[in-house]
Amino acid sequence: KKVAVAKFTRTMSTMMSSGVPILEGLAIVSKTAGNVIIEKALMETRRSIAEGKTIAEPLAETDIFPADDRCRRGDGSPGYDAGQDRRFL
Image (cartoon, rainbow, N blue to C red; front, side):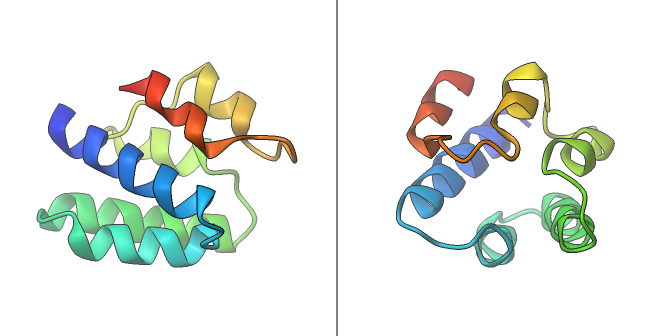
């Protein structure tokens, strides 16, 4: 579980800092997760975000990814630097 979370965090951080839209990034990361359960959780997260939820809500609902206050603070912040995600590992 920790390895999957670390891989997700690093990959999403790289994509976001490169300008990849979050919905596209989640689709890519889910396909490269190497785990069907994680892939389903990320695609469900993607669907929820497309419906207007923040990223923290659906990630927390998966019980796979720890969406704590650090994640919630980054939601919707225009100045958020995805490179800061290294502190979550």
